[in-house]
Amino acid sequence: MTDVLGLARRTPELTLRGVRWGAADIDPGGADLDRLFAGADAVVHLAWKFQLTHDPAETWRTNVLGGIRVFEACARAGIHALVHASSVGAYSPGPSDGRPVDESWPTHRWPGAAYTREKAYLERYLDGYQLTHPDMRVVRMRPGFLFKATSASEQRRIFAGPLLPGRLVRPGLLPVLPSVSGLRFQALHTDDAADAYRRAVLRPVRGPFNVVADPVLDTAAVAGLLDARTVPLPAAAARAALAAAWQLHLAPAAPSLLDAVLRLPLLDAGRAREELGWSPTRTATEAVADFLEGLREGAGLDTAPLAGATGGGAR
Image 1 (spheres, rainbow, N blue to C red):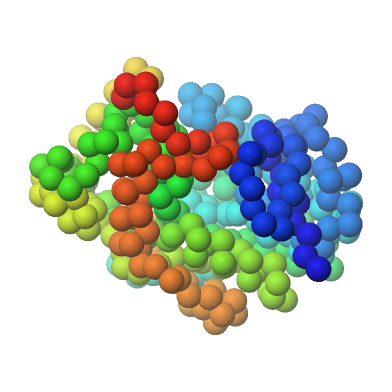
Image 2 (image 1 turned 30 degrees about the horizontal axis):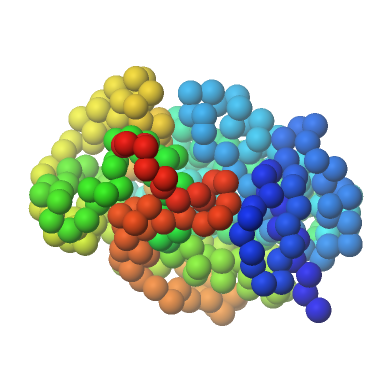
């Protein structure tokens, strides 16, 4: 019999078969994680705070110190398997020839962005943690960019804010799309990522796994989904525009995040395919198309972070 306890800072209204919910805050001084983890076989740590980008101490407190609270509570509770949501953002800049890298590529991250610093710090912490807790299976999932329709409203709020009205993201309404030089990325549908996590819980595996879908995408690929043409935009100009919007609190994403994205390596997901028996059911293009449809429809789920768009002008 499988018993799944989902923990969130605010208890969701969402109903999922076989899942019961509990309220917990991982911040220092938050919930009694030892009590909540007692008797569990596995813990999947997904919690992450992206905002406020203007206050990196706040995200450090939740993501790093809160993440360490989760890890140490797992050890005290005798958890058999810890599956941690790391990221492509933990990796050092990719090789100059653009070849995909496997899980042995260094995780020293691009130093300028809070997100990458925090992801890489937890990787370093887990290096020592594994040595002191050899009986625990520690798995680190390193996905590319995750998309699905019902996450679209949340992702728009986190990364674009009022600069991207969802109703405009439909074929024919955006005649041109800026093509930032050097921008390319790997995407994965969130449902496929969830399947990889499930397999990591159930199979006797350890260590890191890259999880991405083909093909590698660029601005032209996204423009094709919107029936738009591209216009070249130097990376420096894109960064300057984003920096100005961020300083004016018009854009929630910091310009340092663009710096990091432009340096991310491409990932080889061969280990996940071989050891997890995993393969994505949707292409990267299909994942982004699903996300764009969610933007247009204001899609979401019945949880506080994933709530759909509710109108109110550009926001």
